[in-house]
Length: 217
Length: 217
DNA sequence: ACATATTTTTAGCTTTGCCTAAAATTTTAA
DNA sequence: TTAAAATTTTAGGCAAAGCTAAAAATATGT
Image (cartoon, rainbow over all chains, first blue to last red; front, side, top):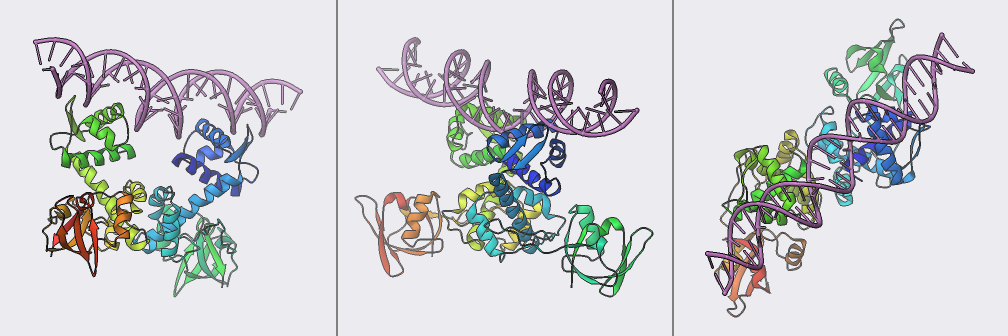
């Protein structure tokens, strides 16, 4: 698998969560920041390699081989993110770009030793699960903050949007993985939420609340 | 700089140690495991980018910019080798291939944090010096075992040949960086050497002796 | 010195992955 | 239901980095 092929597989894997019945060329092109014609080219190449099935004008669906390959890339990406944050003092908004490169180094020894060195982590710094050597994910039931109950207490376990802007916003409001959050009030007018974090209170907008994942505690 | 360009710059830098008056196209092609015509193409491209000067039919010489770029790649390569050996349990014959990939990830934060994480090492697992952030090397005077004095005691500080075969040979004879070696006898017939390593004695051929670097102690 | 050998360069082709423009297909909506 | 809009594919090109084969320049040997 070339670098470009791996990136396409990862993108298709990602989009399949959303579009269960095949990933459209346009959606794929957008995810890859490229043009539809390029996406078509690559989809055809990947179909030739039996990494996916493609019905023209309909969409692409990963084969088992394609899924395995995508999950391996995701495993590498997320393990490197843990390494960067825990060992090299990266903050969670800085890791993505570098991990995009590291994820393409395909050496079983490298990845498995890195996994062991990090203590077999099951979640990356954004709260996304890290597949194990066999490709198995550990799932935790995630509640999105926007659908939380007033009065309940939660732990922050992940984010949906991993853009630098959003992660910096969270940092500046002292929200990180593991942060304990109590929902004080929900404003019916704009769906903003008043939260208690330790002894301070903050108000977050609905668009923030839609991107924060919690676990009830 | 693309991946291929960086590899060529590294190769030219390496060959310049040997061929002070310009690196020939053939030598470069051989170092890169490619054909002379491909080397010519790349040399022209690098000359256009002011990374080197090229006199047709004569040879190529790195510019200051080219040297800086090559040294950066070497720094990254050697730091990752240290990481692989010290943190991920790689042996010194396994590191090269993976480091060839890692060396091309160009992030100052990544490299400088890695350097700090490793404790600012000055030598890689083969005894080659690691340039610092400013590109400065720490040099130690190296004595090649083939030119050692009978009766003297040395510490192993590096190898010339870094092939897997040679490194595995050294491992199987319990020779590594830091090993203390006393030269017991030099056989005039074939220039083989009898060495004392701790309380065992071994005999090594001249071709081994030409590839081991020592420091007198 | 001059023919031959070696080295280096040039010319032209391949593959990968992207692009634009145009054609084909499917969807939407009047 | 049929014309317009949107989506997808095809066709043809481009740049990078490699290749082979042939031409040009330099080196060598007698």
